[in-house]
Length: 484
Image (cartoon, rainbow, N blue to C red):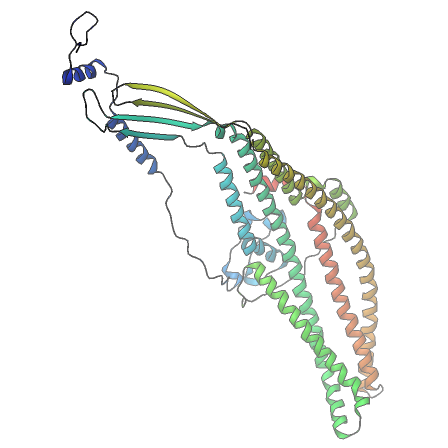
């Protein structure tokens, strides 16, 4: 066997001496175990900053037993007139306090605020850089031999494509978070309108109930007299039917009105987050809105920049634009870069790098591009349809208000005349100058006129509140950018 030679012709050492000589001659060769130990320590240090799990038990959904148990922060109100109003439920709830309580305590709005938290978390996640991949490995020789040692490899790699697509992801996620925020503000706005509507509806139904209960008390003597005459044989059923039917009709209407009142009160309690048995002490007049033609004209001319739901659709469209740009960028080859250091079993250490490319032969992200393109078109058409429907609703409600104003003025005059006739008929009937069928007919007509007037007033208030909610406000954009 020919011995190894040094360059100067001297015989090279062999066996354990040769291995020891090579180790001393290569001081730059690292030892695997200290590297692995350092990597494990670094990993453990990073894990110390991880989030931990905490339980969140489900609630019972009981609602507040009374409005006096709740507080309303004025700074959280979406409209200036609500923020400037003092919330004090101890003396009853006026229409503004009902709207404030609905915004602060509505279960539906709480769910939407949770959705805003999710959207913000998604925007935060979209902006995070992808974690690098660390790889460690060690190979043990199966057979021992001269000059063999343990082998190891150490590498780190990063997904470059994820870095290149980060801008599109963050733009899309931020636009989506803005869309959710605008949708929440629009929901708060609609909740204010709904609270005002329900306040007026409850007040109107309570007023009608008072009218019907008073009519039942007024008809009680007549009904008693008719039944007595019928029992004595002084009246037959044909003659007594008008009196009997008058009382039965008012009793039926009172029952139907009571059921409608129960429903309205239940809806209002649910909107306010109150328990089903919580008292509803409503005080003051219902909300009155009188949008004028100048406000309507200004709102129609500047509608896309005033309405939060339309601004939300615009933000959603921008988010989809960013998503489409990201899908187009993702059609190019995905790139992964890495650095590595390794030592084989013959104690040779190497440094290197790796590049990974996805070959765009079949997929090329064409499916996602097609989906993003179709979704963008759908959002564009949805925005146009919403804008057209809003303009149509505003014009219709404006025309309805003019019709209801005319109808209500005529009905008020008619009701006053019938009220006067009812008062005169009651006096004549008590003096025996008027037969009871005619008296009952006059009372029935006056009651119908009064309840119709109340219903017309409520219908007019509903349309006015709905139109005001559709108008938009010039200070909305300032509120949207500063409140949260």
